[in-house]
Image (cartoon, rainbow, N blue to C red; front, top):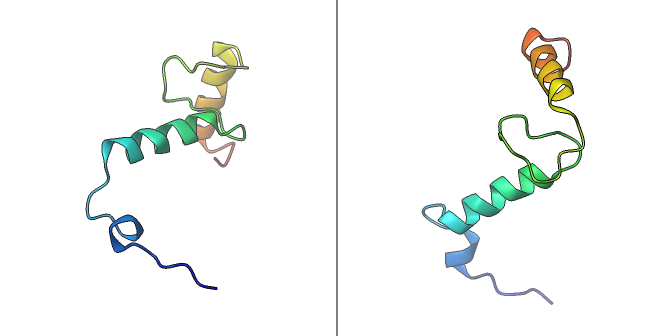
Length: 65
């Protein structure tokens, strides 16, 4: 009961814009890590100073990202 795998979808030669965009959106919507690099996340649950303190803590090595 094996499904046939299309080689063009299984191993794309170059990442398309849609795949990169979906990868960015998936990373941004993941709840475990806030997307600190994005200036305006759509559903930010943290105030900006908390995000900045977390970024400083991660950069200092206090929090392992």
